Image (cartoon, rainbow, N blue to C red; front, side, top):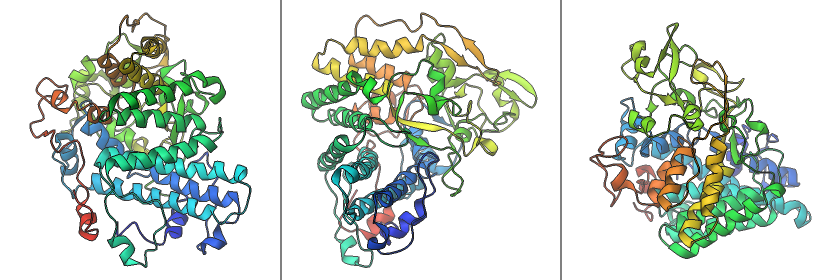
Length: 511
């Protein structure tokens, strides 16, 4: 963390690169007393904490793609060692796809801590100040939730560190995974109490976002501490579901809208999102998920063919399910010739694959997409209403709730709506409503996990599901969608190794 614990106000000053729907103001490099005078100053600092998440080192590529590759849903078509390690579960402690997200997450936490500390200097009524401070608590919990799921035991720091005090950093120790979860819950409860019911943009957290994340945290914790946390997960998810009109959330009628950068701002489904609309101030702020998952040689997007599902993954989807059309690209125009996926390799590139590609991010990238569809206008849903329904369904099965089946079927029912989409070539078609997927007549935990796999495909969720349900031995074996992963070792591979540079300067934390 030697690169993290610098003068933290400077970090905020450098991080206000801005989600386009957030207020952006410069932060002068002054003492805290000079910076934190009004609630607007607190908001500016909080905005700085948000923007680290949209950096290339987190959701712009490094973490998002790592989560895809570590799952059983996305295979690697390139040969870079750092990506091979992610795909084959041979991750070393000097992998930049480990270190870069780690470093950037800590920058976000440092910015949130500074906002919380600086807010103490603002002398206004709690009812005015606390809703803004609650955003800092929320985003700190968001970052720590990623850290603890990735690494297990990690240091927990909820205060501003003076980088001139070398002893302050040398004495940092690891905090147990259980204690980190306790602190995440505490932050989210504060956010739940003070955040508003509705927000102008889903890039800002609402009360529903805090409740939904609490539900997901409890569901995740239930993997090691069952029934009580399943009940908490169910209850908290139901608070969102039962009050969806108050919070302004629901399923979007058209599944494709969730991955259409031109329409997503009007959708009620995202509960908390990372907003990539026209972020230009920092070259590392733009997202590269579209080219990473795009078709090599495609005349439209010129993708890089890095993260590509296997044929077994595609074959596991019902071809009559509208979500299959939205999730996969099966046609493309390459060199002026329109071909289906059996001919995608006509580009001649070694990494091009004759199999369907991921379509969620390259099909409708919005007006700000640059070359290779970088710097898109996507709003990436970190948690959306369909997942809340599935959290309640999964927890409901575990506790015997009578509505678990209907909650799952509500998600499937939306898929039957059809909508406006395309199979490739970007000629939009209106897809009629259908009877697929049919409602289930009974429900098991496995049914919910399968529905999550289909509904949330390629959204950075599957690896976390594999870890919390301890599915690795099953899904990375010979019968898995990607075939045998011979180096998979369930004794060690659920946790990511801590970066070696951090271990070298922090003697009291260990892998």
